[in-house]
Length: 105
View (cartoon, rainbow, N blue to C red):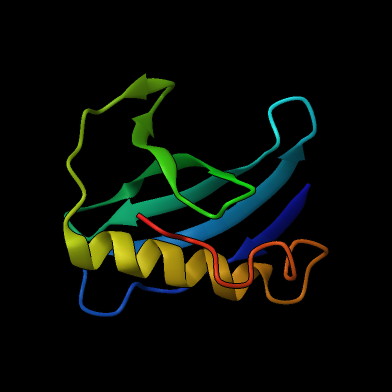
């Protein structure tokens, strides 16, 4: 598992706390968890979870709070900021080459 700490997503109302990535050999996907806080609820920690299969497309992006799916519809700018943050976090990890050119939505 790879972890990293974050920064504010440029032009969006969320701040990234951490990024964890783990390759699932059985499913052949990179499982990604990104901790985030929203500007209007800075004390609450949410987790954005999604998978990235080998071909690089993002699958099943969900916003979770206390283990529950918030059914949140990510805005285009939010999705772009999340994926940019994950790419930056992965750049110096064992997943960097696997993720080159990844993140097709």
